[in-house]
Amino acid sequence: MSELKVDVRGETCPIPLVEMRKALRKAAEGDIIEITGTHPASLKEIPMAADALNVKIISEEQQGEVWTIKLQK
Image (cartoon, rainbow, N blue to C red; front, side, top):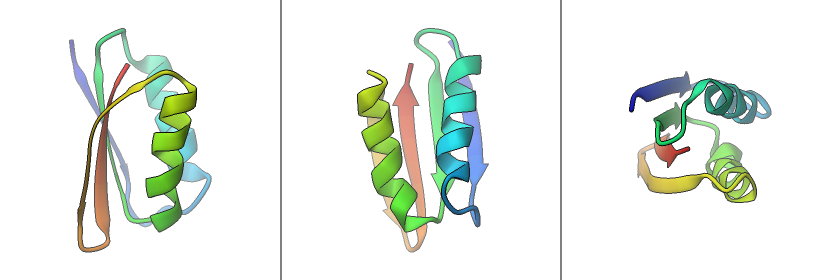
């Protein structure tokens, strides 16, 4: 099992979502994908997209304007 880190700080839609999908394609079953960003809309969109793709959301954290979402494929 490995952990993929996706840093999309400073990027706006649709980049964070596109990068999340790319990471999911690369990831093996059970891998953790950690996405860090600053775009407020993506904080809502990524968990919704993960739900739609049946990807488990492990955690969502926010510190100031920076958020981190951890997913498990």
